[in-house]
Image (cartoon, rainbow, N blue to C red; front, side, top):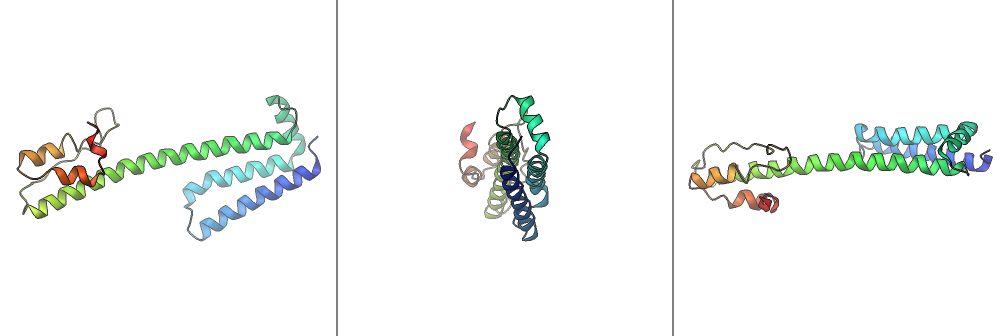
Length: 163
């Protein structure tokens, strides 16, 4: 059976996490859609810390001899899920940032060239859905129209030089 002291401390820590996340939402430091995973983590940890026999049962099923260690295992799994979620968000935002930088560079090139660059079409991703296509489409189109294609590559921080 899980010691009462461990259950109380785990419950207090879970409640603290829950209230910290709510406070971050209230201050608008954390958006609601990103806070859901943290709130779910705090809720599951709270339930497991208060439901001592359930924690013992889950620990037994997982082959963990010391039941409170199951709290750490569940917490670690939730942290990995949160990190994976944030990694996908960061990857998407990075791609969108590169596309926006390319479009800004095209607008600047058009403005400097008096509209000579025409309307270059940016296709956000290649056929496999991995790489921005501005290097292959917009830069070539700018070069064909006599405009300087270098601002596009510079604006993306060199990310487009991978082709």
